[in-house]
Length: 127
Image 1 (cartoon, rainbow, N blue to C red):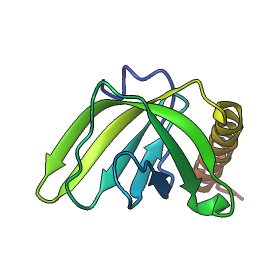
Image 2 (cartoon, helix red, strand yellow):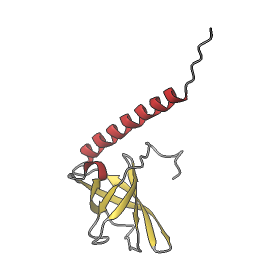
Image 3 (tube, rainbow, N blue to C red):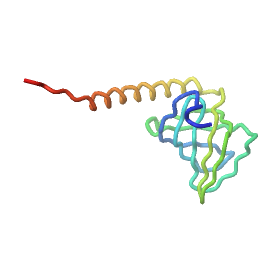
Protein backbone atom coordinates (compact mmCIF):
# COMPACT_ATOMS: atom_id res chain seq x y z
CA UNK A 1 0.00 0.00 0.00
CA UNK A 2 1.55 3.31 -0.97
CA UNK A 3 1.24 6.54 0.99
CA UNK A 4 -1.62 7.79 -1.22
CA UNK A 5 -3.70 4.74 -0.27
CA UNK A 6 -3.09 5.03 3.49
CA UNK A 7 -6.06 5.72 5.71
CA UNK A 8 -4.12 7.92 8.11
CA UNK A 9 -0.92 9.90 8.32
CA UNK A 10 2.33 8.16 9.26
CA UNK A 11 4.66 9.80 11.75
CA UNK A 12 8.41 9.36 11.90
CA UNK A 13 8.68 8.59 15.60
CA UNK A 14 11.52 6.72 17.24
CA UNK A 15 11.04 3.88 19.67
CA UNK A 16 11.61 0.24 20.48
CA UNK A 17 9.42 -2.64 19.32
CA UNK A 18 9.48 -5.66 21.63
CA UNK A 19 8.06 -8.90 20.23
CA UNK A 20 9.64 -11.80 22.09
CA UNK A 21 8.09 -14.35 19.73
CA UNK A 22 10.03 -12.71 16.88
CA UNK A 23 13.32 -11.97 18.66
CA UNK A 24 14.67 -11.51 22.19
CA UNK A 25 16.16 -8.18 21.10
CA UNK A 26 13.94 -5.20 20.25
CA UNK A 27 13.35 -3.87 16.77
CA UNK A 28 13.54 -0.17 15.94
CA UNK A 29 10.28 1.67 15.32
CA UNK A 30 10.68 3.78 12.16
CA UNK A 31 7.15 5.15 11.78
CA UNK A 32 3.65 4.72 13.12
CA UNK A 33 0.03 5.54 12.34
CA UNK A 34 -3.33 4.56 13.80
CA UNK A 35 -3.41 1.52 11.54
CA UNK A 36 0.17 0.32 11.45
CA UNK A 37 3.87 0.70 11.95
CA UNK A 38 7.16 -0.01 10.25
CA UNK A 39 9.88 -1.82 12.19
CA UNK A 40 13.53 -2.48 11.41
CA UNK A 41 15.77 -5.15 12.86
CA UNK A 42 19.48 -4.66 12.22
CA UNK A 43 19.79 -8.40 11.57
CA UNK A 44 17.71 -11.10 9.85
CA UNK A 45 14.57 -12.29 11.66
CA UNK A 46 11.87 -14.80 10.77
CA UNK A 47 8.23 -13.72 10.85
CA UNK A 48 5.14 -15.92 10.47
CA UNK A 49 2.85 -13.92 8.16
CA UNK A 50 -0.21 -15.80 9.50
CA UNK A 51 0.45 -14.98 13.16
CA UNK A 52 -0.76 -12.10 15.36
CA UNK A 53 2.08 -10.88 17.59
CA UNK A 54 1.70 -9.49 21.09
CA UNK A 55 4.12 -6.56 21.22
CA UNK A 56 5.17 -3.68 23.39
CA UNK A 57 6.14 -0.37 21.84
CA UNK A 58 8.13 2.11 23.87
CA UNK A 59 8.43 5.55 22.28
CA UNK A 60 11.65 7.52 22.82
CA UNK A 61 9.70 10.54 24.09
CA UNK A 62 7.80 8.40 26.61
CA UNK A 63 10.57 5.94 27.51
CA UNK A 64 9.11 5.14 30.93
CA UNK A 65 5.85 3.83 29.42
CA UNK A 66 5.09 0.98 27.00
CA UNK A 67 2.02 0.31 24.87
CA UNK A 68 0.76 -3.31 24.82
CA UNK A 69 -0.58 -4.00 21.33
CA UNK A 70 -1.41 -6.85 18.99
CA UNK A 71 0.08 -6.55 15.50
CA UNK A 72 -0.22 -8.59 12.32
CA UNK A 73 2.59 -8.57 9.72
CA UNK A 74 1.60 -7.15 6.32
CA UNK A 75 4.91 -7.29 4.51
CA UNK A 76 8.57 -8.09 5.10
CA UNK A 77 11.63 -6.81 3.27
CA UNK A 78 15.12 -8.19 3.83
CA UNK A 79 18.07 -6.17 2.65
CA UNK A 80 21.59 -7.25 3.44
CA UNK A 81 21.66 -8.09 7.12
CA UNK A 82 18.60 -6.06 8.13
CA UNK A 83 14.87 -6.81 8.07
CA UNK A 84 12.02 -4.31 7.68
CA UNK A 85 8.51 -5.37 8.63
CA UNK A 86 5.21 -3.56 8.15
CA UNK A 87 2.61 -4.37 10.79
CA UNK A 88 -1.10 -3.65 10.99
CA UNK A 89 -2.17 -2.72 14.53
CA UNK A 90 -5.19 -4.72 15.67
CA UNK A 91 -7.68 -3.80 18.42
CA UNK A 92 -5.80 -4.46 21.64
CA UNK A 93 -5.27 -3.45 25.27
CA UNK A 94 -3.56 -0.10 24.74
CA UNK A 95 -5.05 0.88 21.37
CA UNK A 96 -7.02 3.76 22.92
CA UNK A 97 -3.84 5.10 24.54
CA UNK A 98 -2.03 4.74 21.20
CA UNK A 99 -4.79 6.71 19.46
CA UNK A 100 -4.33 9.51 22.04
CA UNK A 101 -0.58 9.45 21.41
CA UNK A 102 -1.16 9.66 17.63
CA UNK A 103 -3.54 12.60 18.22
CA UNK A 104 -0.71 14.36 20.06
CA UNK A 105 1.63 13.72 17.11
CA UNK A 106 -1.01 15.11 14.71
CA UNK A 107 -1.39 18.27 16.81
CA UNK A 108 2.38 18.77 16.93
CA UNK A 109 2.64 18.21 13.18
CA UNK A 110 -0.12 20.78 12.53
CA UNK A 111 1.64 23.29 14.80
CA UNK A 112 4.93 22.66 12.95
CA UNK A 113 3.16 23.24 9.62
CA UNK A 114 1.86 26.61 10.87
CA UNK A 115 5.36 27.57 12.07
CA UNK A 116 6.80 26.69 8.65
CA UNK A 117 4.13 28.71 6.86
CA UNK A 118 4.81 31.70 9.10
CA UNK A 119 8.57 31.46 8.63
CA UNK A 120 8.09 31.26 4.84
CA UNK A 121 5.97 34.42 4.85
CA UNK A 122 7.68 37.63 3.81
CA UNK A 123 6.48 41.07 4.79
CA UNK A 124 7.62 44.21 3.09
CA UNK A 125 7.25 47.66 4.46
CA UNK A 126 6.99 50.27 1.74
CA UNK A 127 7.53 53.93 2.63
